[in-house]
Length: 252
Image 1 (cartoon, one colour):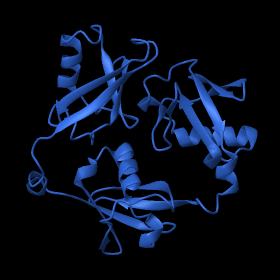
Image 2: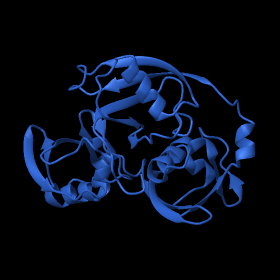
Image 3: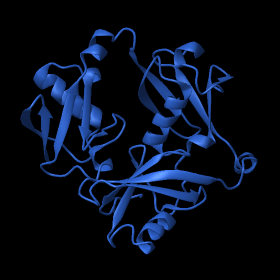
Image 4: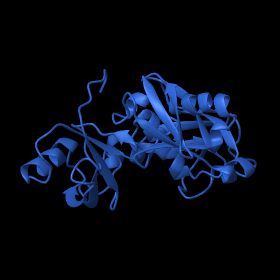
């Protein structure tokens, strides 16, 4: 499909595939304009596109969609201070590579793993060289993580998860798009065990939203109807985005 890249008031058309990673699109832009991918930020409707996802992860991106390109000269000039490194994320049965900054925290690494793999953040235990990365606010560099370091991911068992409070009351907001209720911000309270389907039913039955098909997104990842807010890692004060549409992808 064709998308329109908008930069400094100028527009140009770029051909992309639905399964093409955001990072690959940045590399195409780098070849055209000689702007390093690390200095680029792509966004649609104010919503940043994450390197680890494909275009099909963004249902609002369709043929002819305009995507804003912001070039950050600070990122380019301070590349050595915020150097991107490639590390290996290894699960018991699979592994994949991921790009991170040396200054990223353990928490931000867990969030990136969640975006790429879908693993709930609360179930992750990360280890490097036999040491658990147990302080989520420490930088990766403080643990000695460098280029091609291998991070082992173990999952907390269900018994360990039961040690956590079984149910919490969450206060969060549902943010609509500009074409839906003029971009309204809707405050809600629900139990963290509530599913996305239950959230949808609440909004429809209360007539907060018109009766349509909707997609809910948390931290730039499409939410699954039959999974709970807790499973998606929704925390107090988070924002969930809602768009009209449906998802009919294999494996979803």
